[in-house]
Length: 296
Image 1: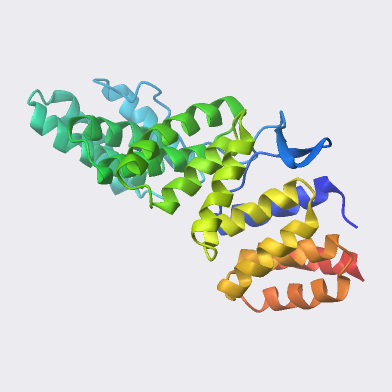
Image 2: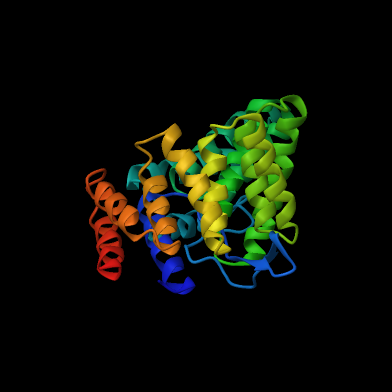
């Protein structure tokens, strides 16, 4: 059976390739197997945020710094033209004095930052728009951007900061639309990375209770079960997920992992081989082959 660290490394490798969200590690409270306690480890993926922490207000030199950082950021997919657009819009925003014009430019600037992979700055400017024009759509854009930055946080401190910002925006969305289960799921994930992880677990369970086929909630509950080494529970969550969506590649992969960890080796082998036919990805294939080698 693979060690917890080996499981974690494989999960991280797949998460990086698939672009899926991966939580900071949590451990099982021995006094309550259903309770999760926060672990002091740092996230392992780079942080997707702007180099200019003050969001570049009025400083063209910082626009250049952002362009350089965006180019170096492996998560930034912006072209040089898109980065130039970012600098241009920010310069226009900094020079604008009319409130309505600044609001319009803030929205453009948020989109430009999002394109450049600078999600915290995108969230900042979407939030600026939402403060002037409160509405579910604008708060949702701000929440989504902050949440995206949260998933790339390089430290627990930064994750806590961005998670809190995302929660604030999503809570405004949920106030108007309590049935927005996607927003509720994202709020849950920010709580899990905070000092109140059980609040997040409870919210995920509420989502599944309201929508038993909710793929995002099932997936995250499965990941949490693997992280806390509750592999039997992970099997249950991922079995439900792949029943809902048989083509869910990551769901099939993690189901195979959970099966391997519960000594159901033949089922795990069959599923790992199935995963190899589902997606042509060298890194995914390498991880699957590593598991298969260990199951021989």
